Structure formats: C-alpha cells, structure tokens
Image (cartoon, rainbow, N blue to C red; front, side, top):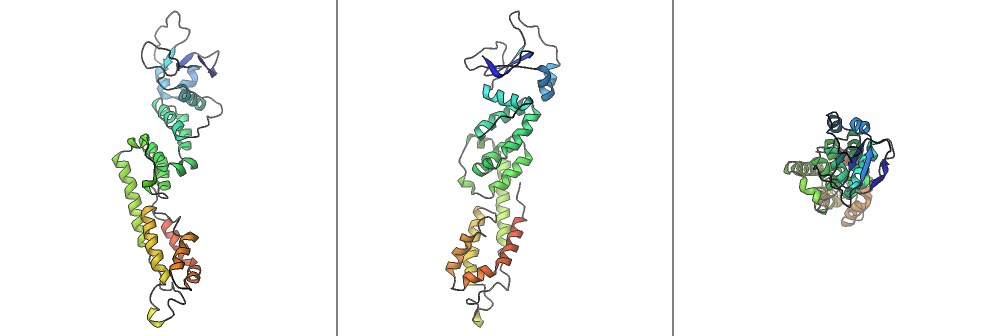
Length: 281
C-alpha cells in the first residue's frame, strides 16, 4: 500500500512504515510505502545526507527503487514528511500525537520538523492542560527554551494536580529537582514580600489610639491565606483576584472592604514585585 499523499512518480526512494530495521523488509498489514525524493531527504536531515552519500548496495532484480525500513507507524512518518516537504504542516491536536513525531524527528535529525514541533509543544492549550507533561517532553529531548516555558506555566498549578503519564517516567531526578527548587524558592521569596507598609490602615480597625500602629484586621487573614496559596501556586494570579480579597474583607470590620479598595496602590506594587521574581528553571 502506497501513501496517497507521498507517492511521487519520480520518487527515487521508498520509506516503509511499520517495518523493523532488518534486511528482510517485511511488509506487514500496517505498512505503508512513501515514495519520496532522495534530494529532499538529504536536504532536510544530516543523517540522511550522510547515509545517502554512501555507495548504495545493488538492488534485487525485483526491486524497482531502494527501500528504507521505518519501525514508526505511517501516521508518524506522514507527519514527518509533511514538515519536510513544502506543503501545509500537519494538524497536531494532542500531545499523544506530538510526542512520537518529535521523537522520530530527533531520531532521524529532521531539523525543520524539530523546530516546528518545538513551537507546537508549548502551545497554550498544551501548557494549560498538561504543563508537567510538556516539561517532561522538553527536558527529555533537551529543549531548554521549551522546558523554561513549561516550568513557568507550572507555577500556576499545584504539582499534585497533574495527572500521571508514561512521558513523566523520562523526567530525570535532576530536572525534577530543578522544578521543585524553583517553586520553593519563589514561594519563599514571594511570602517574604507580604509585609504591610505603615500607612496600610483601616479607618475603623485603626481608629483607636492603641490600635493605630497595628495592621488592619483584614490583613492578618489575607497574609495567612496568601502564604498558603503561594506555597501551592507561587504566582500572583490568585492572591490579587477580587474573590480572594473579598474573602479577607469579610473577616474584618465593616470598614475593611473600603480599606482594601483604598490599598490598590499597595497591591499593585506587591504584584509587580512578585512578578519580577525568577520564574523559570
């Protein structure tokens, strides 16, 4: 069976999917032949450039053109060829689809495919749904920029919320340790910034002379809940949200809500300070 897309009449090489690397070139029920061009393969991959520059063995009498066996399934091989040839790139909607194509692209050194897949790996939908898996794939294939992007996305979620996956087995202790250290150090640094200025007051809480130097009542609740939140998610995304602030206002006096509103300048400065903390491995 030939690929309906990659079956060029002038192709001088066949890539056979679902075929083990041996001399038998066994054609399984799943195998698909991709009749492609030697020059395209050589221009797209240094591995193929070197391999195809070697003297080729004589073909059997019943073999029209040379065949290269690929153990990868046809869907992976087609996705690779779509990146290699000047045509529309394949639509990759899931990490389950992306991971084997990225592995094959690196295995066979298809640079153009690798670059495109790197960009797709850190797509917003993947970072939002499975940031730890993205981090695992990035570190597995030594994609430092993508690992940094994923580590930043992971700050917004508790690690315990991430579903286990086979890809996570490939995260080394070193890379996982870097992630843990980033989160812990950032949380500690953010918590250390939770210090109220002297002019953070509530007209009612601090109205008496003996309470004038104390922080407003809402601050104590806010600080403790912010600490807990920052330990789980060391970012500014939640602790400055309106629902989070409203909950603290309800624990204070009747004037605490107005005090929180009047403290927007402080929250703005605090958020900027937290956002400036190191956020990537």
